Length: 278
Ligand code: PAF
Image (cartoon, rainbow, N blue to C red):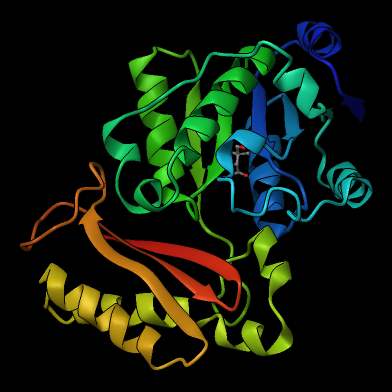
């Protein structure tokens, strides 16, 4: 496995590869959710590149950039086992050298939900992902459904800017009790970790309502809120039932797929989760 921290060396290693290249962009502190992306990329491509970069431009000034969990040695060991052959692990100065002043901004789909609560977040995501695509030149790039709005923003960017690659979306990996895997789960105390599957239970309650024939978006949002409010440690940031492709909040039933999503604080940890109903 090659581990490279600078762009010219990475480009040289990439140029030597024949066949299809899959990219898995990550911020490290890898878990089974990331490894599912890597395994799928290994199965579908001739070579797999993984980037590990905690991207400062997607964190707000009061967010957890400095405390975001990092364990590069463990990440590299996991990648050796999963088969990621080429790892790009640049320092911040390589991605954002002095004088950097170009950003990618996707409008529409990046504005509601997470975008409304985390100003600048998707501008940072789109910028770093576009730069990674330019550096790695992948045929396919792999993202988790857990970050549904991130997927929508990246798909929009790729379509709008005619980027020559395919975006592959991989289902959310969950713990046995339903909690979606996330590097930020490591912030939870044991008591908070026990409370955290309430997000999944809320999604399941709304799905049960939908499956029973109640397709009212307001009823779906209420069903999620009722479950979340039954957990004393959970503080709801938002719940949403939106059109799954435009991410516009729904006010009446639709035949199009619905994205149920939420952000919930448990202690100081902000968790997100989602489910598509169709
Ligand atoms: O999903 C993530 O881990 C990050 O947002 C990404 C796509 C690696 C960009 O920094």
